[in-house]
Image 1: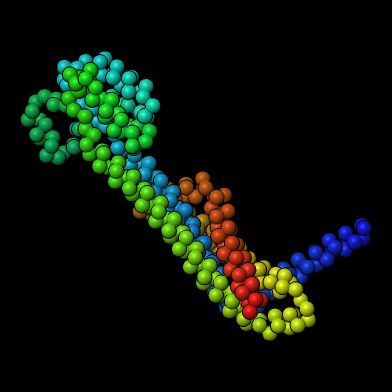
Image 2 (image 1 turned 90 degrees about the vertical axis):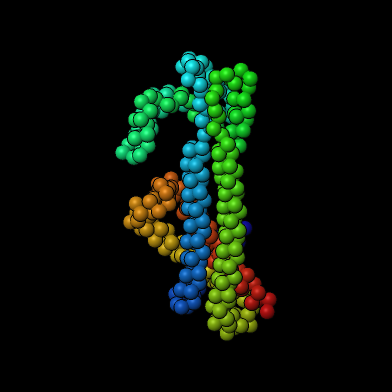
Length: 312
């Protein structure tokens, strides 16, 4: 029993060793076809990685927009500071509210001067001879869809004599557009991922079919001498896997070089989205993604290409 188990293990090791050796030989011997297959998989890996970065960029920009969207509640000039702070505290008790900032009339005046220093607005302000700004609260919710609930809360009768204006009409339009944009981008990203994966599989499949066809005589000889389909299929799976593996390695190296060399320009181009920081924080996910796409395309395409050929 021990000898039988040892022999079985030894035979399996020899099988895998020969399979890998034949696949490795095919990989180097079929220079142009190997290059063509690896190139197609490389492009698919790069596109898949680009989509991952694209989703990260969209999430970043969405968060930036959400942080800039708020409700501005302006109070009447006669309302005392303590009354406004009480309303602020009551807003913070709401589950929907993430942040509330109090801006006094003096702070609003100073912010205006800082933002419009040297332009024509300052001349108009100086002619007034007084501070025209009213105290206000700026409210941010946890989710964009929750602004309507906060607006409804501020519309209570007890606040009517205190609040001068609630500026949320523009926010509603922005929120709706933001939600539509996010959904559209997610759908587009999913569609592109599926489409590019399908195209990559088809191209890789046909490229590997050419590689298999170029070894038609060798395969026929192996079949005549009684070789099993698993023995014939194995080297092509290894060949496809090697194409995917090297395509993933090269794409990762190229991505790393580009990010370190051009990160400043890319950050400016993508409106503050730091691609290098995103890369570092998700490096394991990116490596796994590239290996899954590369090896997956190589192995699946090889499997179906050989399977179809063996059936023929």
